[in-house]
Image (cartoon, rainbow, N blue to C red; front, top):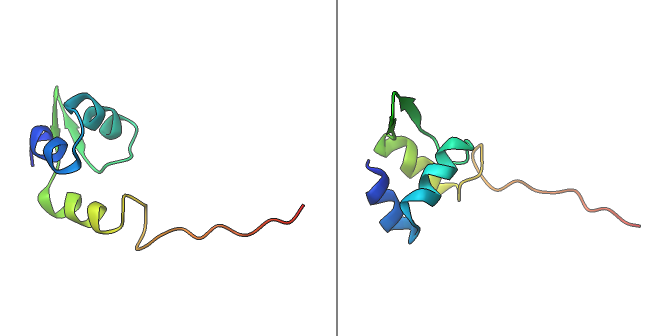
Length: 64
C-alpha cells in the first residue's frame, strides 16, 4: 500500500503516516528512501486498532 492511500484511509497527512512508520506504530519496512507496507500487515494493524498483539491491551486498575 502507498503512504498516500493509508493517509486517505486514516484521514491523516502523509507526514503523520511517515512519523507513525518511523516510530514503529504502524508496520512497515524501510527500503532505502521508500517504505514498504503490505496490505495484509496494514489491515491486521487496522483490525487491532493499532495495538500490538491480537487485541486491546487491558491496563490494571490502581487504587491510591
